[in-house]
Amino acid sequence: MTPQDLEKFKTTLLKTKAYLEEELGHHPMVTNMGTDVEGRSYDEEADQAEELTVNNATRLSLKQRLGAVNDALRKIDQGGYGRCEKCRGEIGMDVLEADPESWYCKQCKNGR
Image 1 (spheres, rainbow, N blue to C red):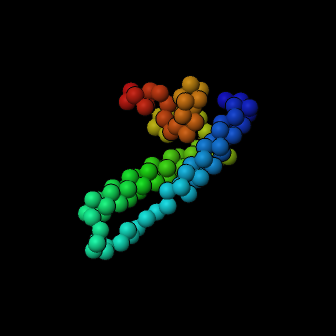
Image 2: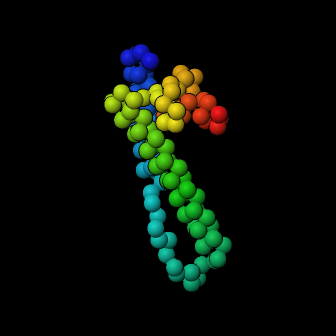
Image 3: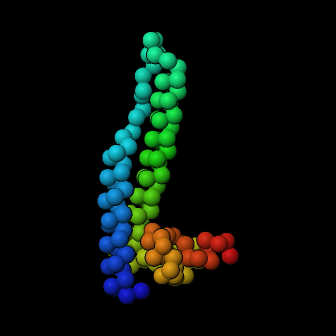
């Protein structure tokens, strides 16, 4: 992988990181939606519970992807970017183009 390739992936990953951090800001962690249902319909409580569940699932997904992006950026800085975590072989450019934070080569992703 050329230094230009690494710089291109680093730029892409930094943009993705900024996007994910912004998205996390749009999905604040809600830990308590209240317990007072007096005078409110149970449908409203059910809607709030569903919204809480979806919001927390979205946050988890965003945080997991952000972790993978941060790992990829760390690997670029430490010289290990583009190496498969399983077999230590090279991750193909086609895989990295589709998924710059990929941990695995095509063969390991497919279970060899």
